[in-house]
Length: 638
Image (tube, rainbow, N blue to C red; front, side, top):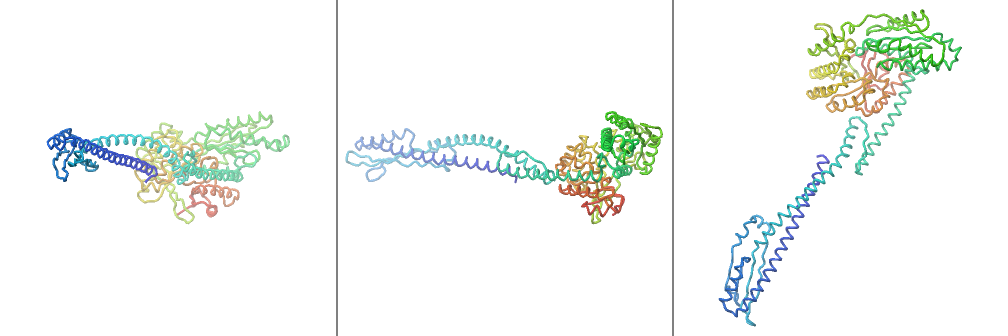
């Protein structure tokens, strides 16, 4: 029984007890008062009648007439006249039933009012003539008691109702802070660490203070760990001068983008080279040259902010690289944008220097050496042309441009309506070699009877045509159906674009409620970028779906985890570190230290940590030593 219900029962019991007690005391005191009044009245009337009879000088007829005259007033139940020897001379009685007709019989039986007889002596001077006994009707007392009981019960009920209304407001004042405290406790159970306003109730205030203290200490610990992790990330991934990705990490990011089946599937790679860096060092000095390189790197970062997923790195000396994802990469971050950014820096600094740019577009499936060679070739052609030259490598247009937006929309809608989708499985293996769950990216059959295409083929146009939420809903449906058949846990991806659709989460919630058993084996994953840019949407996803039994996690994580300010409030179950983060930990101590610190921070929040895209067998034992709970990738087999 809830505490609020117990409080209500206590209040109702107290009010009922007060009502019955007050009513009972009033009834008992009224009953005693009426009996006292009847006894006094009987005594007084007996004395008055005896005095009247004494004046009759023993005349029996006159005495009888006097008794009958008094009895006929109608307020007496019995008047008895006895002689000196106690023999009844005259007795007059009446039936009280007719006078009690307005009072229920059960009330008369429950609350009897005893009319004690009044007795007085009748005499003629010094000669005793006898005695008279007078008993008044109790019906009038019962009538008065009944009427008073009704009025008293009515007033007490009115006062009880007013007390109930006041109690309602009082309980509501207790309930609100109590519900806030209970909500905070439930959030802690769900690994969401939130603070609440301390209530005015002292007992609840102390409880809230203690729980808020725990949350604040955890937040402080998280901030400290996040700072350490960020420091280690910069040591492992960043160039110490510019803060951009160093060569090894940038190449890892490029390789991950080329292999990623769920990514954009296409993009552009730019190489930018500051001409005659050695000459600049001689003319400007090392410190001023370093400052110039820092500003050039910052300018590239600012120029690529409009494109999500862009990577900027310093390869060595005056060589910089930019990798932008998406079929619209050239439109969003054109070569002219990078060139103008650097020209503005050189103009502002007043430095007589030049640079060249070479770039190449790429698509998923191209090898890393192939892309790098094409970009190097473009850069060489630009250098041959002279300062500030720009050269772009040629690549065939993708299918998306060939079909056009309308053609893509029609193909995707047909595939959705006919449910031409298939989930492929990639196992996530724990340190004991057991299956944690299957990663299940969705393949779509765009043409009837054709091949099932990977996400990188259709994802860009699905985003452009606003069909991503329907595609993700289809993936969830297929996963639930597969789980219902074999009871094997499966994980599916949820696009950040789907979270922006207000109808997506209710639609998925309905699917999960319709299959409660399968839901307990379902894992849903959203990209780290969604938690960074749309944290409230991720938290709402967890709030709506985790109580149903589904597990919610972040994928492609690691680069910006420390930027998620309220990560400890999200209520997540697990995190999957991106391949670009864990790649090569067996031969890079700084990268291994960063992964270990990240795992320690996430374990401190009660989250499980997995690694995705493991492609080197030597990394597997090292990753498990660093504390990861499971791995997935090309080298992981059941």
